[in-house]
Image (cartoon, rainbow, N blue to C red; front, side, top):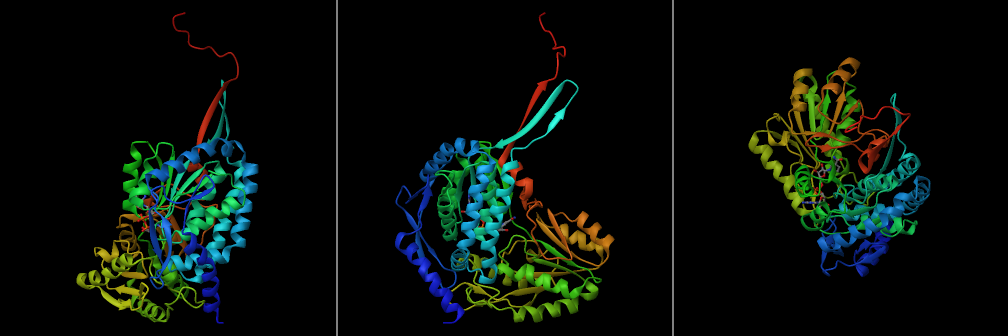
Length: 503
Ligand code: NAD
């Protein structure tokens, strides 16, 4: 058997149980169908074949899950970070042990290529290990003495939280939110994206098998407008960690207003990769290609706008076209595949609709620009050139393997174009002029900037966006800032005079 056949056979072994049992919710440590009995079908983007029936949770299921999370919260919070660390480390071990199964399911459920998903599964384990190690110190605060008082601050977990995740790299992103919440001492209700339920179920199972007490992590599948909305409105849920589209973030803010929800949003992006004429152009080319065409371009930090200095633009774009033509689109479980199918047909329609938008607005399609026939939802990797910053292809998040190239004259024009969008997640700067690199990084309206590099994550650093790209930061201690409250206790040091009223 070749590698593809071996992987397909292994996948088949894994999918059998989902076909037989369906994908149930997991609430209070128990697998449960939706209370209404309703299900929905999840299908593979590779060939549109059905994978399984999924419990279609709604507000009734969210209510039971929120009650389970509330009931489990006091013991989990009181357990202390050292014991929580042990359990979270066991979860990390179990993820590693089942990384192949997770990656197979993720590829089949989302269309993402094996070469990336096999690493993303291990990143999930790393997320648990990283926050496990920090759990013992999560409550630490400071002593802030004044002449009359000793002020002692400490942190405590905010309570049960809701985690709502999207379909792009769903396993990795779920662990990125759930691991710090659990390490902080919060309990969780997780509502994964309706388009990618497989690995959320695996994660919930792994957590329970590794010894997470019942009710600490609860899984409710379902749609955003019903299950997701109910989670954001539930009075027992203290905070919502959300990853998804900017307009969904706005809806969640409105929905959570009545119960004064704390929110953490990781939203969309239209991230520039700015290439100056003095850059190492070979490495810049590698990074520009990698950051838009990896993960099918369905990546919040994708460099979807190439800003290239006009003196080198023609040559750079020509080299890009050559590279794009060599990108390997195919079955996600083939080792060689670099781009798989897009998540669902509506998303394919959205991405491909920009081909006409580009033509009508006067841009050129220098590479790609068509769907690929097949049972799955494949699209050619595409490059738009001759774009202006006021075009929709230069301003809107397309969220596919589609790059828009815009030329600039000088640094100030590059910055103007880069900042002239609603989003502000990430930026990439390519130059060998150190002062310019620092100046441009400083002036870019973005939460994260990489200089002469593709996106490389270092877990202690803050991750998040500005403007329409998000609110709040993840990573290191920033994650605990969200999942925890800070309390100050002031102790009088002596008999300072207390103001006397009515004396
Ligand atoms: P989406 O906003 O459509 O859905 C995300 C999740 O929100 C899903 O679970 C969905 O069911 C739920 N949801 C939808 N409506 C809801 C509502 N009214 N109330 C509560 N929940 C609701 O996003 P998507 O299409 O699944 O994901 C792609 C988007 O995610 C892109 O915009 C991408 O940039 C963004 N993203 C951002 C980051 C980041 O770190 N900034 C990371 C990954 C993805």
